[in-house]
Image (cartoon, rainbow, N blue to C red; front, side):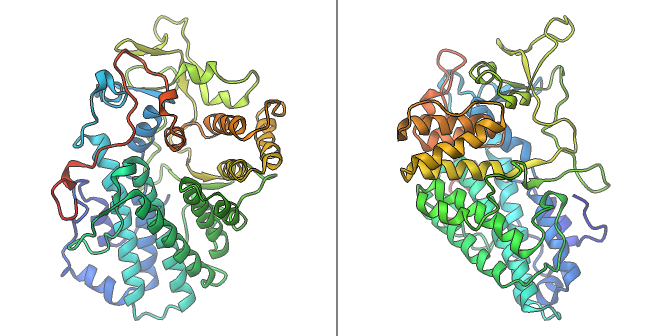
Amino acid sequence: MKLYKNILVIVLVLSSLTACEIGDQVDPNSPSLTGLLENANSAQLNNLVFGTLSEMRTDLPIYFDNVGILGREHYRFSGSDPRFISDLLGQSGGPLDNNAFYTTRNYYGRYRAIKNANILIEAVNTTNADITDESKNGYLGFARTIIAHELLMNLNVQDENGIRTDVSDPDDLGPFVSKAEAFSFIADLLNEASNNLNASGDAFLFNLSSGFTNFTTPQTFREFNRGLAARVALYRGNYSEALTLLADSFLDLNGDFNNGVFYSFSTSTGDVLNQLFIGLNASGDIRAAREEWVDEAELGDTRLSKASLRDIDNPEIGPATQSGLSSNYDLNVFQSQTDPVTLMRNEELILIYAEANIQENQLTEAVNTLDIIRNAHGLADYAGTVDQASLINEMLKQRRYSLYFEGHRWIDLRRYDRLDELPLDRVGDIVHERFPRPFPEVGRQGG
């Protein structure tokens, strides 16, 4: 993402805040903030849009490592930090540390993106600049959709701990709410954003990053919004609602699986690189695909290209190893430091459609949909038993391979109470169900 060179001081300040407090705030008497909240022009609002998108990527690798390791998709071998294979793999049944980087950093990064979006909302609602109501609705629809997404990502890791949903006033944070209440809040916020987008006319007054290439108008961005809403409905077990929402999303059963929204990266000045990328046959710092993910795939599955066999016969390379754990395969999801990272793709929507149909007992439609996935990846039609239980197994298998390292496996198995199916590496290891509430929140207002 190329950030505007004249980005506002307020956005730069927000982007540099430490990750320990939701309530951290710039000086409310600052001329730049006061001017922004009283009479922002379109250029200032657009900088807030770009600042929000940039902040969404804060410590993003931590999130994908967290959920990928807990979901037994990959190993993160690091010479500088053994906690990736001790704490996260539940060594000796030990708990996760509520003050470790893996608990706090991405969690607060999400709330900083939310803070930027909340400032954008306040600036839009208080501006006296000559900006049409349609354009204002465009900003509001964007901001509320992003807030909903960031809250959902934090709820994914906090689960039954709940999260704060009302953080619009950093001096008066809302309380933690339950998982069910958080889902309801997120769903309502997405619907509110959808209404804003419907009233936004034919074009935004702002540009989006390259990760939103096919979603740059209010109408197409709303399709992304409805896709997120369908994911939320699925997580809540509202399968009929998910199908209704998918009809307004960018779901295309015959379309490009990779059409979607992505986090973008570049080598441009002021931008950042994709730190999830590690080259093949690396040493010391490695992301290794777990061997059972390769071994348990069906013969001919083209998705296995997401793992690459290391040069194991070369004594200077060999398998990836650390502390008795090993793999012959490197993670090969990314090929460069500028590759985008998936936020949501059409392939996920197709699999949501399949799952919702299974749960609604529309089994023929579900099989036909799963065959779309299977055939596209070099596999023959599904030939197993056509009943709900068998098709749930098949659907979870297809999600395992199609959405590999996109942040879903651990959440999927938790949704179906199947975390006990994940492999354990050592006697005494456990699979964590959720991350603890971050230490800075313990004892704080509403915490």
